[in-house]
Length: 494
Picture 1: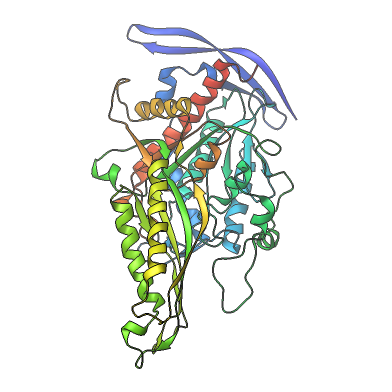
Picture 2: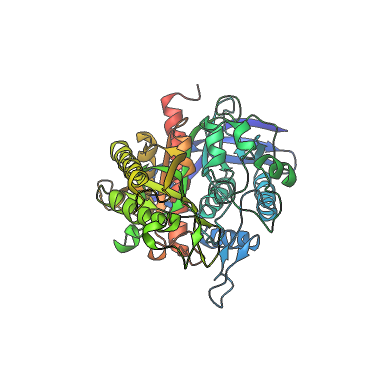
């Protein structure tokens, strides 16, 4: 049980002429185990208070690397930290790191809620608690050959934020918290940003429950999302709905850039204005199997040959319009060394910052595939090529909230000790999709980027220096506090 009291804290501040007296309204929270603890309200923080309000770099660094014990894989050097991560969503190692997340947040005075899709919300009470919280959020799952920082940095920085608030006795006006979103990567279950998409209403829960793993394991039956949620014990009872479950009124995500721009420009922080759109497709090319030695080229319906032509062509279509095209998975049948392949199934990822050109790229590719289907055989009467293209996922370009972006920008200037009018903090777009794309659909959202070595990500050698991690985490901390103050001034808590 907690009782609250209002009071005045007398502080002495040193100036050039000596000491001046300052009276600050504070909040007292009574804990029966520890007595009264003076807690400074976030709305009373002055600019000079923000100057000293930063994370503990060493503690954050240890937190990031300690979580790698669950899923550590793919060593590339002699040092203990020189390994990657293989912690697929809803796996046993994902359960272990989730258990750590829950236990750690509960130790920081948070109430922890788990929804139907396994999203975990840790909420630290504020002065007023019948309003939606402001969250820091990211994910703890990884790629099969992933690194230690993708997603993990954002979650660990959120926990560090809670720790700093506790040790500095800071009382926020409204509740704040940290959220770990389920299956952001889409590696094991092929829907990226899955948990946040269900929460935001962009994905139907029943269909996501039925989704199977992307690949088989030694001939075993593929598991579904629902089966694995139940297996690891993280199918919560709270509705996975933005309006009927855990509500958000702000979402801030710290992430490595996953590209080379910040490092090449020697910039420490990027203020993310939005995320480029992307569409995922499955393409099937069907031909006819034939003997590799007895079938001349002009009589072949070689599915793999035409698939390779398609891969080359779609890259050019995207490149000429400033977009990106990637074939990430490709399977051919019948997998015989002396047989012309009769079927190829492959994935296609198309990305662009603008909705108009994203649509144009996809239309041009579709038109090209129909041309191949019509003319993809050499001799009249020989087997023909058949091609199908099925959209799996569509995520339109996203623009983040202006007030949330300003909170990040002000915090970045403060953390990096830059003048208020400085343009040294870069505004940029994200090339990769993030859970923040979905949260922006339902709540003011912004992102913070920090550089990663050589822009490498989704790879064991993914790396972010300790100083950059700490700078980004301090920006996250201050952004959440500034947005909490902004909400208070706007009247959200009245």
